[in-house]
Length: 92
Image 1 (spheres, one colour):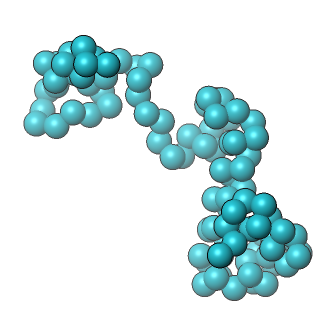
Image 2 (spheres, helix red, strand yellow):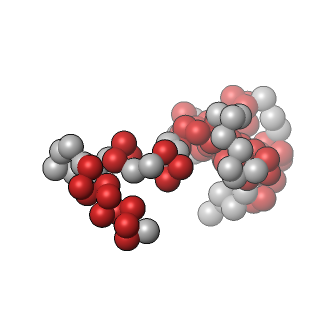
């Protein structure tokens, strides 16, 4: 790891290191990669959980935390939404 960092520092073209300064196999995927089915590093269950969590958070944000309205937006029942919130660890 030390050699990789030293190499990146030497090869860096600017004042700060960026992903382009590291070998491709070490590049960090953006958060949007959770929606890209070609990135399978996390596995099926983890990717599905991340996707569902993001959908629920977005629906709740759009409806100012109103679970009834968020459930309608998602096309699911309030009971199902509450269940998923608990399973995904999003319930406060």
